[in-house]
Each structure stands twice: as structure tokens, then as C-alpha cells.
Image (cartoon, rainbow, N blue to C red; front, side, top):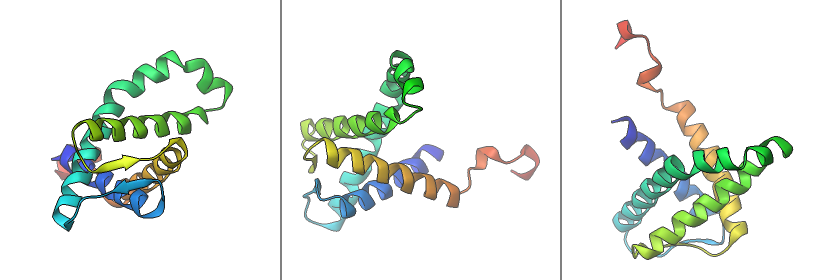
Length: 131
């Protein structure tokens, strides 16, 4: 259930990024297909983050230290751009036109995702007696 909630929150964050960033395009027709596309891209983005981000952090540890963590913004943008490429290969109508659109989109997705995670409580953080 937790993974489904996270996917919906990421899809909502992607919707905000699609709305705010001119280079992020969602070209499906109906509202239902847009929601389905955003959910699919959220799952793709989550899988890419789960598998590639730890590897990138391990390999680029020195860059994270030298830039005081600011390289993470670039890495998140590149991972979102990769998710757009994978979505294109799966014939999903979601496309990011360039690096800067991916950079700003990833920044928006991170901020909106964080805000949503603050608003939606995580049941795993509660003590056992309250469950």
C-alpha cells in the first residue's frame, strides 16, 4: 500500500512539473489517459531512482563532497530525463525536451514530493501500539 501511495504522490508531483515547466510534455488526450501515463512514468522514475541512484552516489561520491551535494540536482535531472526516454521507448506520451527542462522538472518533483510526504503520514513511522 505504501508503494502505491508513493507512486500516486510522485505522479502528482510530475503533474505539477508538467504544468509548470514548458519543456515537459504530456500529450495524451483524455484525463484518464493522462493520469495513467503519469502513474506509469512515476513507477518508471521510482524504479530508476531505486536502482541507479545508489550506484551513481557511490561512483560519484567525490563529486557530492566537492559540490556540497549540489550535484544531486544534476543527477536527479538526468534520472528524470532517463525516465522520459524509457517512457518514450514504451510508447508513453510523456517527453522532456532537454536537460534544463529535466533539471527544473526534477527540482519541482523533489519539492512537491517532499511537501506531499510531509502532508501524508507514513504508517511505518508510528509505534506498534498505535497501529
